[in-house]
Image (cartoon, rainbow, N blue to C red; front, side):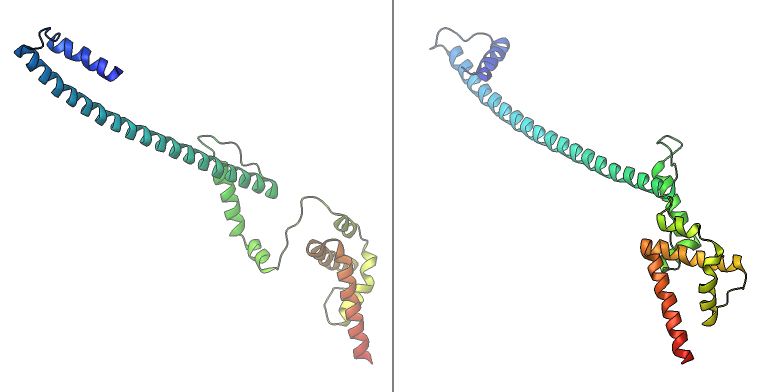
Length: 212
């Protein structure tokens, strides 16, 4: 006998007592009929409850999967935001602080970028009229910043010959060419001196062709 039938027998006996021993009596017939109908109702109710339980379990499992997916998605995007803050902090040498009720590193990083994007310099960067200066010196920058003013005497003469107005003062010549070389270094890296030399040679060639 199944546990379901055992449970029903206990329930029926508690409610209606034991079945009569005389199987030919009217009481036995009436209780047998009652028991039969109640058992059908019991089984139907059990089937309905089992179906409902199965449905509830399915909904619970689906809900748990949804929660798990939402948690995984949240973790993924939070990781991206953390990387964004770290990259922005490294790029601009900023400390955006830790998460607290009064501080949001994500918002701080966005505000920093927003301020830079709306700054005049960013428009020049975007148009190619400006370049970002590195936070660490490179060999070519080190060489340029250590140049003496006299090395620019000859280039200054060539530039003036083609019509570029450079004041005839050592410090002005130095400032002019150091600025130019620094920009070339930031754009071309270690090839900046080759680019500068090619420009000078092209100017010399143009001057000679005009003098012929």
